Length: 175
Image: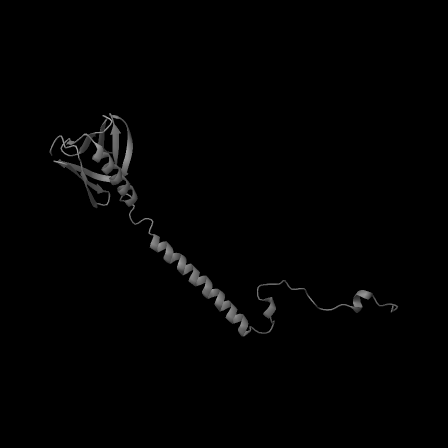
């Protein structure tokens, strides 16, 4: 099948161009946009828009910056539980400095002080070092009477929290 004067490339030459495959290649038609393609793209659009909507809804429910001025509820509960346990075992409890400081003698004989420091409530043992109990505290007040101590804490946003602790061995000083 060899002809004289005709190049083999010229015999099999066509205008075919290789196209790149894309997501809708199985339904591609150069002349029209099929109903099946329209439905597929509508489904894809709805899936993406509802997905974004659900993400924004979940982020709005989380509200990470809602209580940025207040202290954490978990931190407050942890502090109350810790103080309740320690004050129930304390030998003597008293409020000093006009109710701005709570002082008690632990069952081990150490003097423990709960006092505000900058914007936190701290715990000091024998006037050495400190352990932060609550952050973002605006005001702190404590009252003691008979066998109980009443603690009032105001956070940075002005919300007041109150806790009552019962002491079983007694209160040294009333205020």
